[in-house]
Length: 351
Image (cartoon, rainbow, N blue to C red; front, side, top):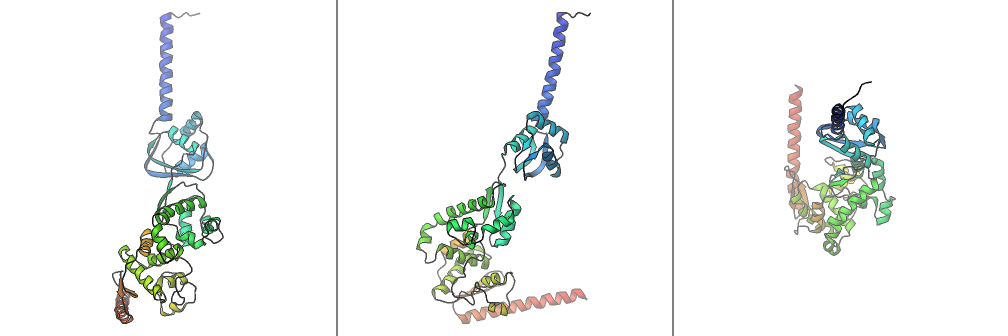
């Protein structure tokens, strides 16, 4: 039986200590090292439901990340993070196993940047929100109906809720319900419109819903923001003089398509066709942005009653119908010339 001296025992203890320290440091570095998961560009890890380590690993691989699947599973088991909550988790640059695993396990998701564009419609907005969040587009579409809980709660029509979907980019958790997301936007609308412009709204001859309806027409009509107050003033002049609004966007809305209108389109019977009905249409035709709402609250004061498009994408404004006829003829001649040029180019291309 061999005997070790005290010096040899100390030597072996030191050796085991060094080995243990190296193993510990290696494991710690693998668990907490910032280069365990590297994303050259920012990617979104979307977990639709409660996910285990296998599912998480597969989701990361599907994002194109170069990870060691076996090592990630080992890290999760070692750290005690075995299940992960639904959510959106941003991965950018370098991160450690411990950071990502603990973040997803605790459900500490990153808010999504949800964008609402101006000049859309209920169907397109519902699809857009459904694409940007976990909630289904049909859930959003239902909220914009007259019978939705939110519409009933606030005493609004579905169109009234939709008109308050103020165009902007919002930070909303990806797992939020459709109702939660819409309520978030409504709070923003109340802060930026209802509260900020309370005195202008209260002193206006139009109700807030009517203001939004007119703003939605201005939104559709104007290509440039600086024209919006003038367009708003024109429509208000027509309303004040009890003239039909005769707003082309309402005809396009009634037809369900955006295109150059034909003569027979103006005769299309529909409650939103302001060539056939008196006053404002029953509700908004799109969701107006803040500049369109401000244009209705603070319109340009003038005597214009007519307008026609120009080749530059702006409008020519007229005070009398005779001036309007002359401007309209200039516009029609330009349109005919564009058709002639197009036909010549098509003819030349076919030869």
